Image (cartoon, rainbow, N blue to C red; front, top):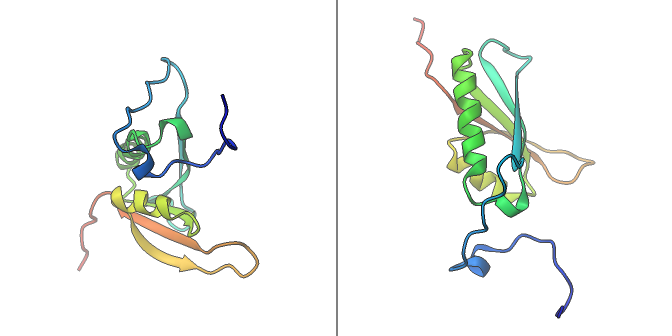
Length: 132
């Protein structure tokens, strides 16, 4: 029996407190994706993380953090010393996630005709030697 309208919004943590985590998806199921590419301004040193997406039913199970850790490991192995990403400021939970994973705000770009501002984040993957 259905009671009231069906909502597609994510549940707040207090609504799921004490609830059992969802069952794991079947083996071979795609639950997320992420992209990474060198940045034009310094392609030898800087990479940018793109399109980090995790399926809604699997969020809060650290899949996004695992994807970021994997990308960071790949980037370090290929000589990148800094990772960057950009997000819209209308998604506050995303900003908490980025900060939790070691990113810091680099700058905010205000957009006049679009909804929300863009926030650029950076994470130092390996310290570069200081040249004197």
